[in-house]
Image (tube, rainbow, N blue to C red; front, side, top):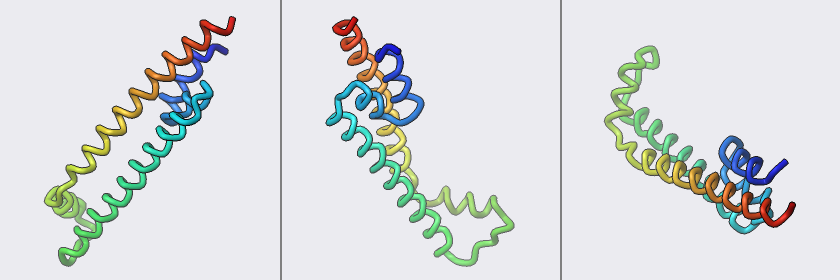
Length: 110
């Protein structure tokens, strides 16, 4: 199958960076995979810190989800929005780069 089709689909639907690896641009693919992995780990750590902060504030009634959500909203989750924006930028770049590189490879190889 044509690399201009397969590589952006893999980068867009599976994981950013996979299309670059399919196009044999290993350095860029590894960097993108590492960036996505790092964002994922940082997001998990921030979520755990937010949840820990909610439960450290005092007694939490687990049968009252509205109270838990109110306490979560009281914390500052803005870094999560920045991480989500960074992921979207990396995802978009990965898909576009995989498509353009795949198209270039397809035009050279008949």
